[in-house]
Image (cartoon, rainbow, N blue to C red; front, side, top):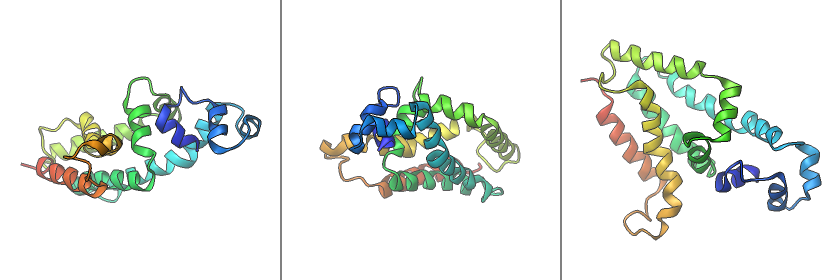
Length: 188
């Protein structure tokens, strides 16, 4: 319940009382388990986001010698996660990609940037080896993949009245993103 409300309203604008009402509980019941919203966020990070981060990182671990496979697998996993967890795209755009997101701040405090630095170093290494397009900016690659996958999925609810896009599915978005990636990230 909490995570769906956070995705719809944002973390800052969602109180424990609102979460209790949405779940059909009294505020006292929610406060019994979570003394503060920060404690609830910590549990959500541990139980929901840590496994997602691990799965996303797996795209690079499992394809350590193939940059195009690693990057396309990352895009595929993002779309797959969005299908499995409908709250993921909106929450990620609102709370991680946007300025001032509380979830981004808390995840940075929890996990730091070691994994990000290692991924950027790997991308730069692949570029030096001629295995990845040298014109790509490593620090923009993940944001670009999110823009191709998560952003359209987060916006898809707003497209319901748009006849040009209202029939797009997650599979269509994945196919489109992978086509763009495989044409643009391969070595020259």
